[in-house]
Length: 69
Image (tube, rainbow, N blue to C red; front, side):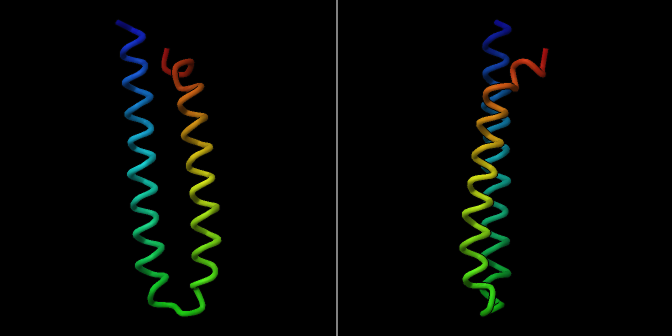
C-alpha cells in the first residue's frame, strides 16, 4: 500500500513538471512572437528548457521515493 502511494506521488510530480513545461512554452512563444530578434534565442532556450525539465523529472522519478519517507 505504501509503495502504491509513493508511485502516485512520483506520477503527480511528473504531471506537475509537465504542466510547468507547458506554461513555460506558452510564455516563450507568446512573448517571443512579439520580438523579431527573439526567434533564434527562443529555439535555443526551448531546447535547454526541455532538457532541464526532462532531467529534473528523471531525478524526481528516481529519488523522490527516498525523500518522502
